[in-house]
Amino acid sequence: MNASEDIKQAAQIIWDYHHVNHELRPADAIWVLCSHDLRVADRAVELFRQELAPRIIFSGGFGNFTDGIFEKPEADLFAERALDLGVPESAILRENQSTNCGENVLCTQRLLAELGLEVKSVIAVQKPYMERRTFATIRKQWPELELCVTSPQLGFEDYCTDEIPMEKVIGIIVGDLQRIIEYSKLGYQIAQVVPPGVIAAFEHLVAAGYDWHLMKG
Image (cartoon, rainbow, N blue to C red; front, side, top):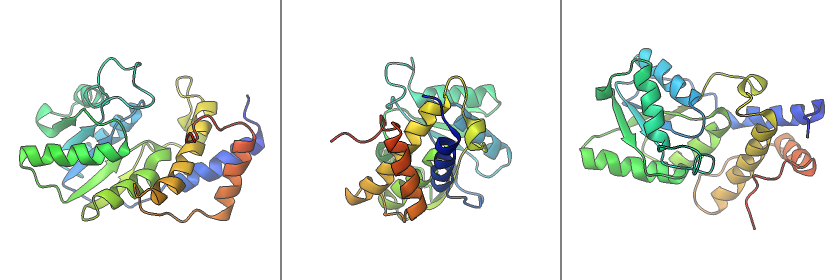
């Protein structure tokens, strides 16, 4: 399935919607919600070097796209990347048990409580197409937290690689849009307004066969 121009245009609409475009400000911590994409760790290191926060929290065990593929929990691999890029071990915290975005919140809260650390503000770092869903999840489950969300600074086509090809990215962003809509009904996230044009792009991509990452049932 090769992406035609109309497919790319529809994907771009959803890609843009997934971005929240927050203005970043200094925080107590940079909080990385880990995944299969180590470029997210690179973005966190950029922010650390800009002195936007004194520590980085890496949160993630094995998720949908890393279970059975990664040899170590996501948080450990992301932390190793940060260490390789010069972040000191003393500035890194690891939560390596969570398996999804909701658990990222709960397990990170538990870790901070165990360490006796108070975190009132964070810059959450995610994949580009997970910005809005991450914002909605954290705002629902940790409403008092002062929150900004960011991601690797890449456009839709530049984000795609041989390891994460465009066909896969399109399927993922379609599924994540559905989760933004449905998870709020289940109480996992705050509700988000989804413009009609975004819904139309979603329906076009589903009809074109980009439905493999949709929720089952």
